[in-house]
Length: 478
Image 1 (tube, rainbow, N blue to C red):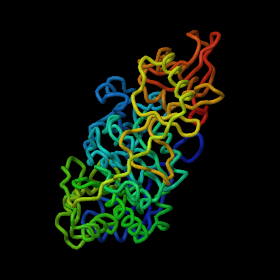
Image 2 (image 1 turned 90 degrees about the vertical axis):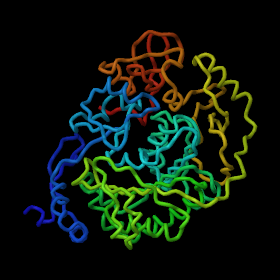
Image 3 (image 1 turned 135 degrees about the vertical axis):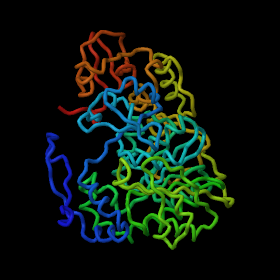
Image 4 (image 1 turned 30 degrees about the vertical axis):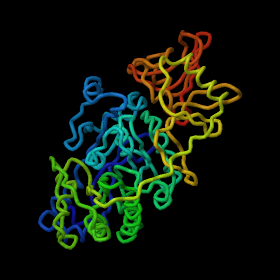
């Protein structure tokens, strides 16, 4: 049979023109031998899934549009993902990343099983939430939608390069109450002791669950061995505990099959922190239970969730939900609101009065030349590498206020006085997204440009043409 050759067939992008070609990838023999031992009579079903097409998913960004409203305007054929109310499968040929609605932040393209951890965490408006290993930001966007602009979202990644993608997604999806940090967990723990109601740890792992989806997961498997990953996971969870409130909830997830990184890591954590209880996760179609026999037969591990590619319409994932029972020390040092530059604030207020129908609510703070609205009840973050705090309104340059891309993406079209609403099927919307000047009439000055009623970016109207303000780094190519 085909799998005796230790290869599987899948499709990957093989050149810059996005032409699809078949290639053959070799699954590591050591990995296959372990999976055969673990799965036994289910092993052949597991292997056959690698000769099947992967599933493609998008998740509606309910900060901008309701699920029902999106279903009415969706240009794609979509099918509901069972484990989250805002997730849908789409067909590969639809390529939603190229549609203007993607650039309006109406949905996030995400592997379907990766939607489950944040859905299981069940974030509610007003909570304080930490996404500890967040980049590029898919789960951050999902958590932010649960908060619905209320409460605090701290989203962190230890890698400076990956944080750039995280910041872009914060802006693209209109998130107003996030603090983006680039820190080690222990440094965050010093400032956020006992602060969070909920913490999501989508831990670095050996990535075995993504081998069907991503050829790089196959190539890198030997570089990220299980024991190294376990050590990182335990270190992260140690500091996550310090930041969680009493009765707070911790969601731990990986995209690997390795028991050591899944049931094994949770079994270790419960041994180190016996004041935690494993919460039952309601199983829906596609979800399998945890496997206690792979981790010292601790029976409450069957409350966890596993996704298998031969059982679910998605890739491999593991999820555990834990609740803390012991009293934690809470943060006492609150954020020090510094005196603001009154001249800079006056320039922002003039801009808002001329261009907005309603002033955004929040605490105004200035960092250098940048003006932000920041969330309430932040702790003192002195000494942390904070990349972004709250919503960047814009900056003061040469004694004038320049609005940010984050501002126009965070507000609905009706909150702007001057707008240009482009048809999603028009050539003009593609020209705008490429950064071209549009020859259109309109009131002089700043204009919020949108597509079918949803904001895309800025333009500046003058003498019968709209100077394009769409960020150069975001522009469509070709």
